Length: 345
Ligand SMILES: Cc1cc2nc3c(=O)[nH]c(=O)nc-3n(C[C@H](O)[C@H](O)[C@H](O)COP(=O)(O)O)c2cc1C
Image (cartoon, rainbow, N blue to C red; front, side, top):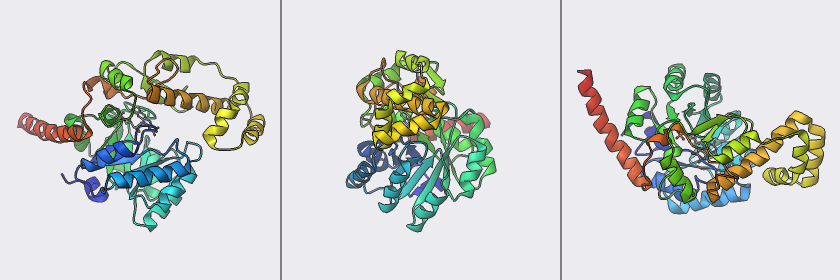
């Protein structure tokens, strides 16, 4: 298969594993890259020394190209970015922030930069800031998808930029890959599908849940960490939405926040006192949201935790190996292309 994305990333198939905290770990990343796609190592919740260790572990598991992500919205992300640059990771993916300096540094060692965006404005800014490709994430996606569906968002951005686009949000099979191509994208990035694979470290109960839930069983809310995000509609998600936070909550949670930011508790306590009520509530939201995210993902606890999940969960009916997912997608895309061709006659 040949697209501008396979050429740019030097991979066999234009199929990307999205960067999912606690899930896109070296074993899953390497499984995707070894199967001909490109795995994105998630560094959002890692400390810099863990990021280095994870990159090095990925290198022992695959000789194929892989990526690492930087989520600028996450505390401590710039320190992780520096490690990624020092380690000369072949592909660097960034989101939720300005990537001009990052692009410059990654290009110095010959790396490739992919920006994740959800709006036309950010797509144009990322192109201007030196990104080599975009991941364009629509409303259907798990986690922080945009306000516009992939079907409407991808072609609009494809038409407006010169760099290749990878479509994300609502892709899980060969029909999806073919649709992405038809919309002008040159690859797909998947979270919900790869989360439910043999190699994925997500709790087994969550793999089962993703098979049971339909496209109608997710919630899109900004009450998780302050930005609109999609998750499975569970008791935990509803509790998280209803939780009552006031500026004092941040003081109660200041130890958790300090841990999250990797900063001394005293400094955080003082910072919250001075930050003003709006920022304090936002910090409290992030601290509780992240804890719920970890508990949901790793412990399979849907009462105290939450699970990011995309609407495409509705077509996911099994837990295959990563290699089988990728091979199935490629085979199906060819078959569907033939059927479409017949319909066009
Ligand atoms: C369980 C799970 C955890 C995720 N965690 C993150 C995360 O930590 N950071 C992030 O930027 N996106 C995260 N995402 C979103 C993905 O990176 C990606 O944008 C999304 O899954 C693509 O849409 P899809 O789910 O329809 O494939 C997560 C997705 C899932 C399913």
